[in-house]
Image (cartoon, rainbow, N blue to C red; front, side):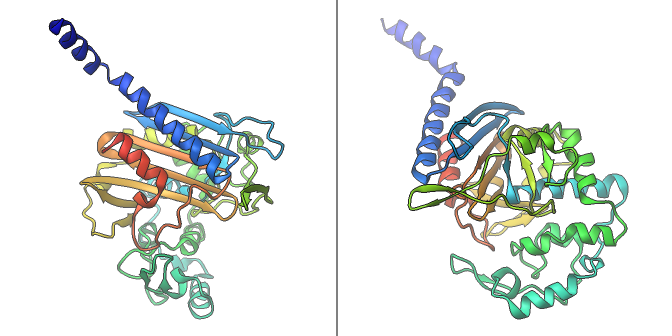
Length: 354
């Protein structure tokens, strides 16, 4: 009998997929409870492990009548999760077509005027300075600084330390055009979307190749007193800061190609030394958690959509979560990388990494 139980225990120890199945089921149940508690109509989530989609779930319905179940092809505006994808494409354009990363942001004719306006007359903290929602001090945007494309990809428009500045980041396409570069939509599609096989991805509303993504778009909702209220579709087009419309499988295709080394050395970002507040480099927040490097980005389209894209490179593990409310966003800091403040990220790390 003793030998039997020893053999049985050894058998189960050799079946990691069984243990992972229970972990996935528990995580899926957590996400469904999160979706219901937050009043979110549609939520899609996917985990990439070792270069393959290991698990995915599509929860709820994505229309105002509650008749269309969320599916793999359901798309969302991914908001600022656009940034690492756009940044990767810009870096590819630099290495393959000679776009100079030293091109100054003031090649955009309106850059200096925009900077002075926002610094002097608006309360936006990442432009005029102040504090973020957590009370962390924020340096004002430095209008005298000769900010380059490379600086902007690292969120250094406000000075030597990173300040998450989406308005400034959104001007990258104009700086590229001012430096006689190509349209950003062409750069991102040619350098990243098509090579990675990001099927059914729209680079903004006016993308002539984005029809499938637009047909399957989850309608946006804002939860008011527990009730999901349908919102007007946002009309902003594609910029480096936001605008991509995609489903999780499309982002997973980018993630797999990124980790495969199709777009350079991902290890460089994992080896980069960072301080206790984390960092922002090349379109990614960087953070060390329990000695493990995390790369991530959040997405927030106010009262409409939210997203989380979290990578654990040492484990070859990635989480992608998209929703048609702002529930996935957690009011993250503008000067500190702290993804563990996200309840979804925290549960994922506790379940699959810790």
